[in-house]
Image (tube, rainbow, N blue to C red):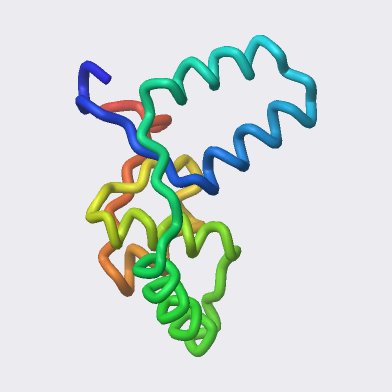
Length: 112
C-alpha cells in the first residue's frame, strides 16, 4: 500500500483465493486474506468487461491461443479499467499482452 497507494482485485481472483484457502482449511491464511480484502477494492464484472472479454475470446480462439476462461476475464478487467495486472503466471496472460497491450507486473520477480 505504501508503494502503490491502492490495491484492486478482480472478483474472480477474490473467489479463487477464498475457495483455495477454505478448501485446505488454512484458517491463519484466511484471516490474513480477509484483512487484506478490507483495504482492497474488489472489481466486479460488468457489461463492458463481458463485451470486451467476448471479443478477446473470439479473437484468441481464431488465433488458436485460447487460455482459461477466468484468465481472459481477469485480464480483460485490467484492460477495461486501465490497470496493470499483477501475476506470477505471466504466460497465462501473454496473448492479452501481445495482442491487446495488457500491462503485466510480476511482484515475485526480484527487482534488478
